Image (tube, rainbow, N blue to C red; front, side, top):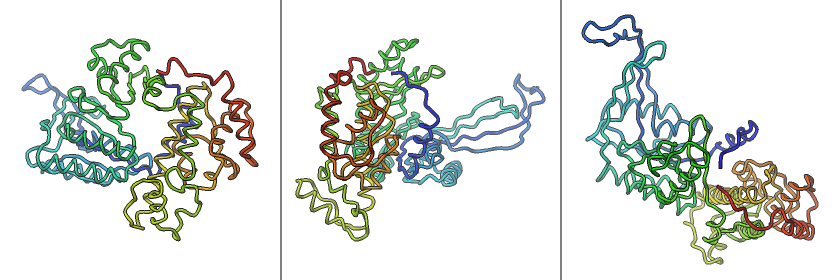
Length: 439
């Protein structure tokens, strides 16, 4: 579907969600060098301008620039990349450090130079020439194994993984496999900025972001209209076997293709509003995973033993009995749950055709400030807390009532009232069945 214009208020909320978010960036880091000078004459040796040197600047580029954007938005970025044994490697690593990027693992490969693009430009910002220093053969051996190991290590506490592929050798099949497996095990999103020669590497990614030229090349389809963009996005998704495609189209904006509702249903994923309500009620029930609704859960008086005893009773594997890991564990669980809430809420919005504005949190969940804060950041919705006595399904029943009636009480919500709301909402013609076209 074509993405609607982003309102300033929502953009502000989304950007604020980066605060504290840990994103692991893997890919081809590079150094951009600019030699700036003045042009006053043409060389007598050849018909080329003579540039009188004024100054030289350096910027981190490629995957390092992706990590820099994350830190600039307030997030925590960990970078995994390959560098050479040269002065440009020192300049690149220093630039990353100054940008607040955590050097998760910079694999040094003595057989290659640090990827560097040197641009000669005039003081009027006109580019005269570009010189590239690079070795684009794929990494192998100890270098590759080090990258794979670092992905598994640093992916263990990341909220998302981004792969930035520039065909400079860092992204190999084993590297992508490690990223896909880590994201799947952690149930976190994996986003890939692709290059067509590696198209078969990206199977299992959450989102792949080709530009429309890359999409045309991968699908052998012409893209000049919204209909053609839709068809190409579907073909691209089918070929890459990813979950979603976000195609950038220059001045035409972007095209987003996710999973269609019929595909979700075939995979056993809830897709009608009644199903989604039931799924959310099950997902966020107080003891579905751990007793996340205990307002004392993350206070110093509790240990990880409490969590493990509940996990064992549910037949789930216990976590390592390390009390120091408790805050990180709880934070990871809350981010995972909030991400799922955001996905389900997005599906509800699609099914009903209504724009979600606020989320009423009722039941025990209304007592957990950290979970509610993370949920607000992930969903971009206004969070209003209700009664702790009502059922979890009320979160979404009350929300839908607020959408259609634009009024709902944020206090005194009882289980009986919630049940009545849910029955009314589910029975309405507006939310019966599924949406035919969800592209």
